[in-house]
Image (tube, rainbow, N blue to C red; front, side, top):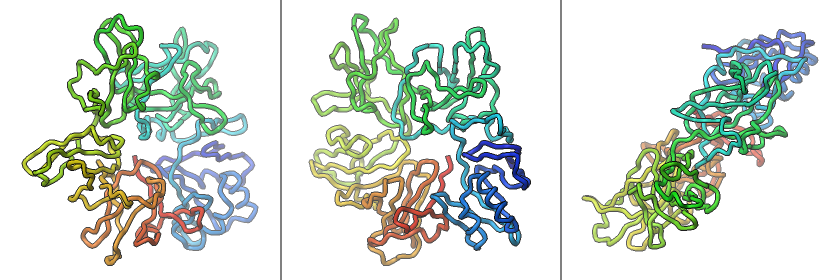
Length: 480
């Protein structure tokens, strides 16, 4: 179903529409299926083109390039897809980006759009966040139970309308008002565990939550408030006489001061957000480190002791065939900070194996056989570096493919997902193609192939954008 913008005056993506434009603006711009579309007409006069460029914040170079018959063009790091509608009229489109949180309507411009785009929360917690805890000065300000997040803004009894806008609803401004109570404003919504940013809109004025100590620069000269929806509660029974109990683990770099637990009738607890994966931890009770007595799952800590383990997510089984005469086989990788003394593999009928809980993503690893480090002999995918690390994608959501080049000795793929490291991921030859399954975060990914040292664009992908070397990068979009 199409979602169309009805434009009388518009503030969206930095676009400002004013009443003096003579062209029917409602026929120029629309939002549909996650893309922003514009229809451009070659018959427009230079004055009209200039006015349209100003109104919609479109680069004037677009008008010089879009009628040349190219399927894609890139202007100012933005790639546009071009479709000819009829002679002299084209449609250009780019991926939709949500409106910045600091944008708001003014007295001279109004925004009217199909509210269906914002009627459902967008569940896209940031994947780079490993853990988080909330810091509110007023305990009423936020709560999270059974997937229901409750936001509360105290006071403002004279306000006519208060709204909640954030990353969970694409920073929309058309959702219903928060509910007014005798002590403030409240709103409940269904949210998945994760990290979110938000602001309140009080009678049209944007403001962060002053009862929330967590904030992040919104890149517009102000701040967004940050909140975590929890998915786990650490608990330690007993120790009622302790003065302080601190949680410390691999998820926060074993910080010995940051995570103070709260005293309860049964002991101590701390709710947190934890990303999927395997996490090791201990409690520090009045400066004494102790394991979780109620958790039998432990891993050696390398200091003649053990750490407690909390695993969230799905399990991958690492396997090494053969080496039946080995006395000891261990596993180390980017998933455990390459700790060589933590993951001991177990003998099985065909060699050695170890189940390990991972978050979806890309990992490098090695086996340590009687003290000797080695890559996985049964895994042809590896990091293209001198270390010879094996590469694996857990729950891959994309497959890089490069056809032809049958005589190439080595084909590597690198890009924004690997910080353009030349020691990125070596592809393998399969069914006449070079392939590499990989996990890519939702959104834009830029990349290139490196064939025997020569950097090339993806010949099967017409989408690209310019880079600082004027050599272009291939471009793709990963849906959430």
